Image 1 (cartoon, rainbow, N blue to C red):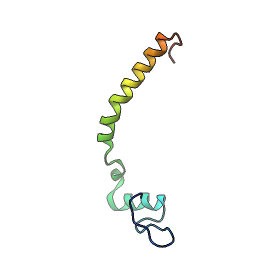
Image 2 (image 1 turned 45 degrees about the horizontal axis):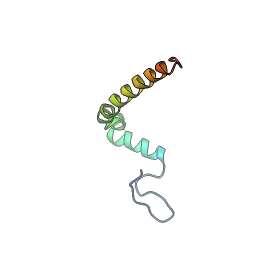
Image 3 (image 1 turned 180 degrees about the vertical axis):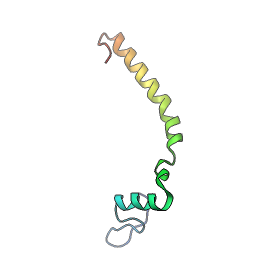
Length: 68
């Protein structure tokens, strides 16, 4: 959606709306095309999220605020 070329009148050349993009992708490539790149994103974000929340909880305990 973001990198498609635009015609006159600010209309995209591939998709006319976000819903059109969704339905066209599912129709042409199948439902699982919506999850392309999930594993690389997850492997990048999971360690960061785990580390952040563990450190955040420890800081709350050390500050005397307590945990959730």
